[in-house]
Image (cartoon, rainbow, N blue to C red; front, side, top):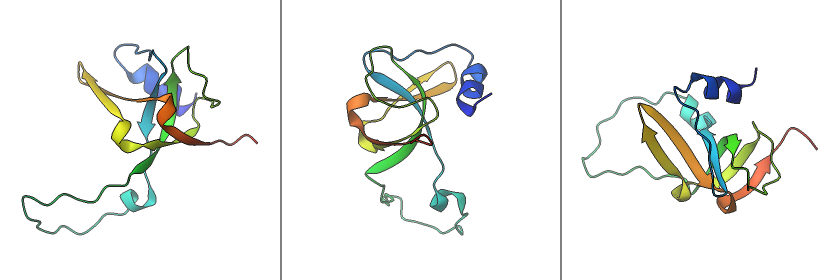
Length: 107
């Protein structure tokens, strides 16, 4: 069973993206895996965020034309992500035209 299938089974409700949207899951980057020491920061401090992020494709809408398989890694404009919260679950969606590229294990 793939990680994507486990994620879908864990959800209390089935969610199906539509209108050329993709359901994605954030992947952990190497910098996020390292634990940084705790420091105090000013209240108005905003950490610098990357413009692009890598996300795992969990499910795509039936009308998507993106050439990617479930589980592939997508390079996405992070400002275009939409987070939907419903009944304690978070769903990350992005429209397929904001995907800049695909990392795939297949050639």
